[in-house]
Image 1 (cartoon, rainbow, N blue to C red):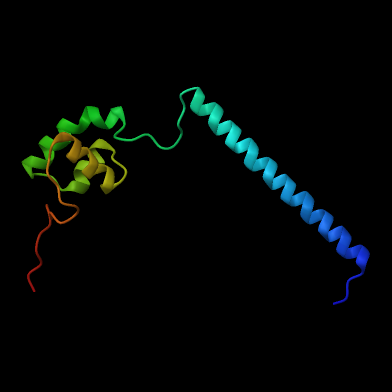
Image 2: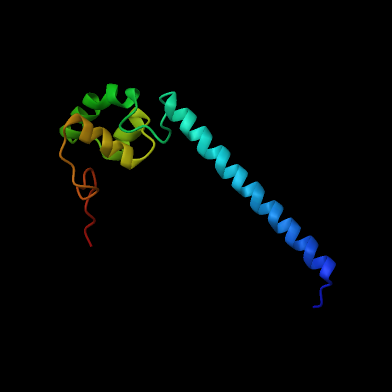
Length: 111
């Protein structure tokens, strides 16, 4: 594909404009982050549990320790969306849980 000198010039001008625009965006982003930090905002996801989950932690622990309901049933009762959050709540309540290794409420199949 042959390109004329004028076409190459236009292409280089567009490249220079794109690079300039990218640099402006980076500069504005850095300025905005510095301004937010100066106002005390750090950004990112907050650490720890939501206060609503902290409030139900003891109740969840009691049901879990009683071993009368499966973890799925407990999660449905308290409207806990994920198993990871469920185990975070238990850890917050003081239960020593080692991942998903503890099987509860399952019946063994006899083959």
